[in-house]
Length: 396
Ligand SMILES: Cc1cc2nc3c(=O)[nH]c(=O)nc-3n(C[C@H](O)[C@H](O)[C@H](O)COP(=O)(O)OP(=O)(O)OC[C@H]3O[C@@H](n4cnc5c(N)ncnc54)[C@H](O)[C@@H]3O)c2cc1C
Image (tube, rainbow, N blue to C red; front, side, top):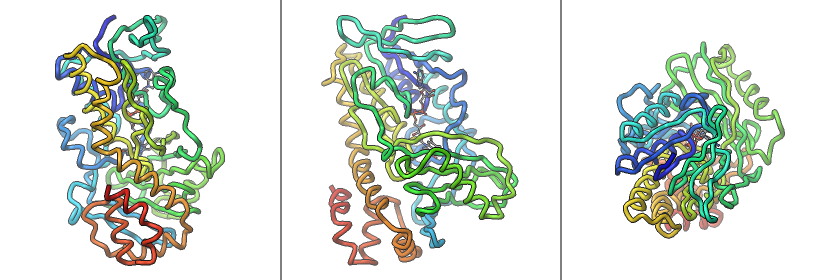
């Protein structure tokens, strides 16, 4: 088995990388340990409408609901609204993540990529000390898949980076423990994705309610692993639901548990190797959202691989074009939001209430850290000192 590139993982990062590489004539294989692309779903399924800009999804089958906006709700109920009226495509879709992932994979195949399911990468294949592909378990067979480039698009539990000697270990401080129910028979007919904050609601994280139609919603929680113990996330979520009659009568269609990295990105390039998406920790440290970055980084990774194939040069310097591109696109934002995460973690519930209360009528045109800081400093000049480092990062 011989390819230009072998991609480990058929999530959004893997499929989009494969699509852009294959489109440029690269011989690509995606290997996926699961038996079905996108299944089981481990996601809140919220994504910005900016996903349309990438032209990687056909039709509308993957959309469950088009949202009018998002709301952030402080512990005492003060609500900041980001509405489509002011924020355009900053607002989002709630998607069917299984169909979403399958459509991304279908797009890659249409451009010429191949996929092997039930194929688990077990190590890097090396020749003369150089990475030269992947060893994988496919049913009862152990395969050696040769390739000039290996792409680790293997998600939060990524092993590919570790095998290549990259430090991938996540500290509890940088990991959200998540639980989510997809509830039906609820009275939550809302056009908004809701985020509930507070130390007593979700320590170091938030509860989300993402509607998927009239009487169905994803109701989930992420709590920072360093502020929680095993089983606590579910207890917090059950308490949140029990306190709301409109959710309490719901029954689950699906329950999931998972982990979401809220870390700073790690090294994403080595000779003959790239890491993309959650594997490279390209997740927003505040929201835990990683779909948009996985797709955008996948595009740059695929294009970089295509250029490397033309040059027949796969060293770190050539592949660094990918790291430069994704860092230019959203590297600063990830760093800034990591710093912001630390400031938010420090805040008492009453501070969150005060801040949310003062911003509740603010007309946000975008939901960036800079726009929130500007609004806060306008309302509370006394916060200027505390927020200046963040403001500098946001402007950089
Ligand atoms: C509970 C929860 C809710 C979330 N909600 C949202 C949300 O609402 N919006 C948002 O933007 N983000 C959300 N995220 C984050 C989002 O799911 C990830 O950022 C996104 O899936 C990253 O895509 P990816 O392609 O990098 O990784 P993944 O989608 O995780 O794909 C990795 C793939 O690699 C495969 N794989 C792993 N190891 C191997 C191996 N050894 N061999 C072969 N295949 C392998 C896996 O089976 C998987 O299919 C959430 C995360 C969690 C845990």
